[in-house]
Length: 110
Length: 113
Image 1: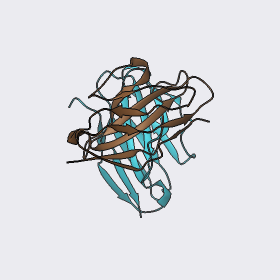
Image 2: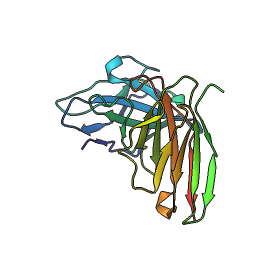
Image 3: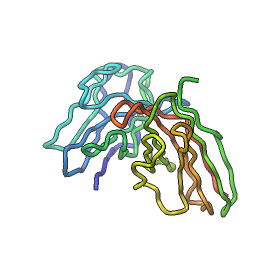
Image 4: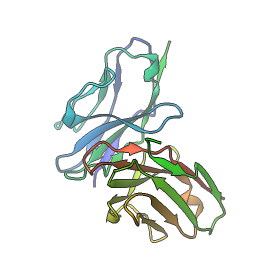
């Protein structure tokens, strides 16, 4: 069975500081990894997926199969980055049938 | 509207009652998903429709839960004999196919008292 772990419930950083939201997974096959974001009073939305290798809103994430991690990073946090972030995994061929982590609340302070 | 619409936004029901939650996907999206999010948890997959058929219902917790999508558009999640443990936010999402970006609705918050 697949599992996604986000060890931090809350991460607080100052504006301009680097951000790293941790995500580890367990899955025996070749997973597809995603980051979803939920801004205050808005709906859940896709931030990025590892197969597209894009940088969205300055965020990047690299799939490390050796460490089974998919940490989300941004070099300089902005106030508008404050939100709830969920890491999610899809098994091979699973598409949008996702297993989510418990989420990390990012708070960017001035 | 352009997005996924879920009704009602909030539903309070008594233990043992039957409830229906509705999802209106984005027009033209053939794939539709239901997720459940309990307090402090991430969304949990319930069921996936491709067109009118339930292609994967492996996440439904028990036989009190059932979902339909008779015309391949609107979907209804039905919960019989509700229990307090069913209290959660029920999320619906749709996409043009299983592998393209899924767009989520705002959710229905179900409270069983």
